[in-house]
Length: 427
Image (cartoon, rainbow, N blue to C red):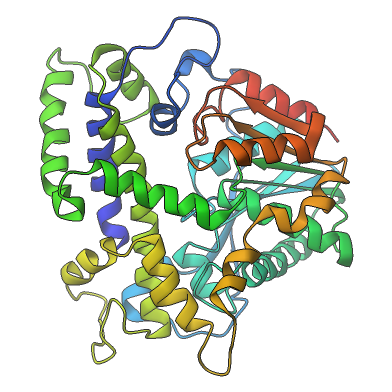
């Protein structure tokens, strides 16, 4: 499944380039549409420009935290890795938890490491529990989505990293951050740690969290269902249209680079089609879901995507299973993979309980009473409803850093957002 990601992402970006509208030229974050901001990110002229470059990053490998045979078709996802950057002298260690489907080597891990390193932290970035790497090497139950067990797995991996880093470096304290689903998980980790005191976090920064995870993912399902002509069967035509835009955008002979500035130039030049932008966001989440669902099905032999009678080898064609994986919506994932898994082999967890666990309302009193936890998000984040934005304001009070624009993680690199994160996280 991972083999299709680079091409599909490139095509999605190209399609976005044809679909976006011109921004205002103010000094504020320039993209006034939350979906467009989610796709484009932060153009170069608006990014924080005083972050350290050329940090001494290390890609570290942990021994698997669980005993599990790796199916041949998933061998690409080994080993269990995290990204580490350390200060030369004694320093607090900040953990960063990746968002849905992301590995520890994602660009946002690198960005957050630069942001926190500048404030004096050593930083360790962990893969998301929804990544195949984590499912194989760290998940006691390899069907992601139950908040309590995903958080327990993350907590165990953080402890293993902490022990490994402490063997060579002096750690003077701990902080925690995460983005998207990783931010929601960070909130529950902070609540867990308030009971167990393994880390006693000095600062916790929640970046664009989902409030009700299952409500958020259903919004992503609707973005795709409502805006992609022909549904999943319409992807080839959608992709072809995106590729057709390449020739138009680069007819002036500029070198071709797929990055945020490429998208921003297209944003300035092309006519808007908001349904295309919505479809791109929905497809991006569906891509992450397809990888997760395929891996969970193969590891647990759930017979939803790959029949139990099929033994996939490392070089077998995955074409029929890719198509089936893309047809799995988040609702399908809950009903056909998550709930059945938690109700077999002696486990009995009701569907309502699985859904209720992944909701910040469950720990509202803890979040409201914790002065060292702050939230950073945007009013136009497409994973949030207006009521959920209001919940964050009411719960966090002055610790709620909520901007008018920026979409879902689109303004993470914006200089004012970086400054806010650094001011709160200062040890």
